[in-house]
Image (tube, rainbow, N blue to C red):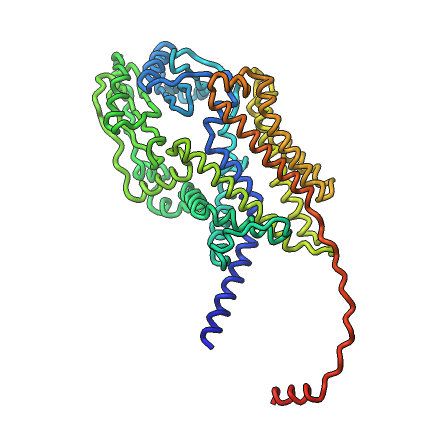
Length: 541
């Protein structure tokens, strides 16, 4: 008896978890698909930005050399500003970026000074370089957790969907009885069974990655989602962040001119103290003043902890003044989780692994959405409104979003490079194509909408190498001859994605609706015999 009760309890638990898994996955599925797809593209955020600025063909240099030329440029152009910001190049983002902040106007009634533009420098020569304005890979990265909504609503919506995703992962593990056996099952042309196999394989194949990336994404913004501990213990949020992460004391300018010390030895000293760690950002306060300081911040590309430390030097003598305190256990854990989520520490092989696992997560969400409709499609039955709505949203998201992303990249090449406001037009192109194509598919039968939308997405990606070749001197053939690995890899990736979408469009044309099965007439049942009646009477008694 107890064994039967245990079996019934386990079956009831699995059924409850299956209900949770189904509906949480459905309600957040379309947003999660977009978050997974754009987040996966964000692992190559600097590389996408470099591809979208083909005018920049820069050579790598040492951090010291780039810093010295940046300081020389700022000494010549803005020696009296309050702060200088220098973003050093690395092996992924090649140019040096500088930014100066003017001293505040002592007149309280004066209007605020306009923000200074950021300047890009050639790290080899120190000369300013220009390129077409674009948001590059930053657009996909920001959409991934802000969903192009005003702050903070996009982040809140992304957080709610991430909570749904984490609950769907846990409930899916509980629901799945044949966890490892079904991993080796992928049956084709079996309708609902095929979608279930695809969903199971894509979920089990990268389950640790899916759980890690979802949980660390939540932890990244946990202070925004759960601000009450900080609010209860600190009068202002700035006080909490200062105690948690440390804060450099900003001394006011002394008002006495003093020569600025060479920046090169400070960069070398910071690298030596970090055992070869790479400097990424330099903040110079009160340059050419007796109270000048130089803060060198470490790059997060050479360690898992994304919250790297910093060292402050005197801007006059070059002497070491202080360093950021060692983080506590909680802050260090949060930094590691942020680093795991962003993947900035990953080398080329691990970064491609992140990318492929991210595509697996995208496939997991997409096949789950398709499985929902496959389970509820009844041959010969009239589909209800909810079914039709889910079916159309699936097409709009799974088949049309890739076309929008390709349009964003195509717009970068087709919009004139010197047009003012072109970066905003690139972003608008993504949404015009995405939502416009989704609206057009509503006018088409479902059986035609899938292959047509996927086919257009495939054509858009396959067109990218051709358009790039026609509009720049960094096409596939020229890049192969020059050894330009970034542009070669990008074109090859676009061809591969286009081929994959094209295969999906072809498969969508092969789907056939199951014929309505006619029930065979059943012979009239025979009347019960006296023996059966007697046996039932005994059983009842």
